[in-house]
Amino acid sequence: MAARKILVPFNFAPKDEKALHFVIKQFSGDRYSEVTLFHVYQPIPEIDGYDPSLRRLRATMASLSGELRLQENKLKEIIRDLIDSGFMEDQLKYIFRPKKKSIPEEIVNIVNELHYDTLVLTTNPKRLAYSFGKSVHDYAINNLKNVLICIIT
Image (cartoon, rainbow, N blue to C red; front, side, top):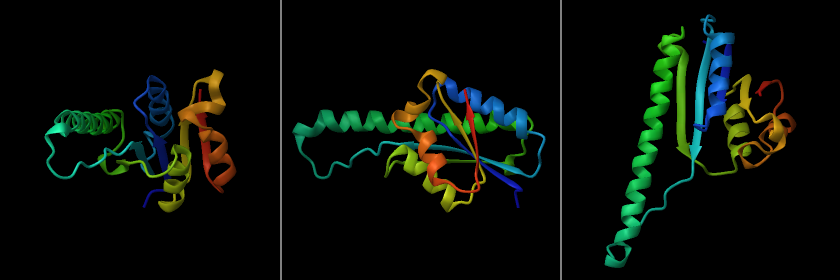
């Protein structure tokens, strides 16, 4: 069992690399840490039935599904990079799922549901209150208890 469970929301932005470097620097030598990369995406609507007028829409949806597969593969690649940086494979996980709530709510819910004790957030220092489109940091600080929240600038 991991002594420290670390959640790293990951949005494929350049600033997220800073969070990965922080996690590597702080936890790669700690065999008792578990790191989970977390990404939620806008769900792609299902199109039922056959209607020739929806052909272009189906093609667009298929393209979006392909992009999601590429993003998930990128997360798997990042996991391999973390292994190369000193983590053991059994210390690393990723969660890649459709968004059901706002980003701040998704993050707080997963921290609480899966009992993470460390949350690593990133931001642009000039826009601390507006990361992910809402104040993830404020929401996390106000709604999480007994969780270490690291904000990487």
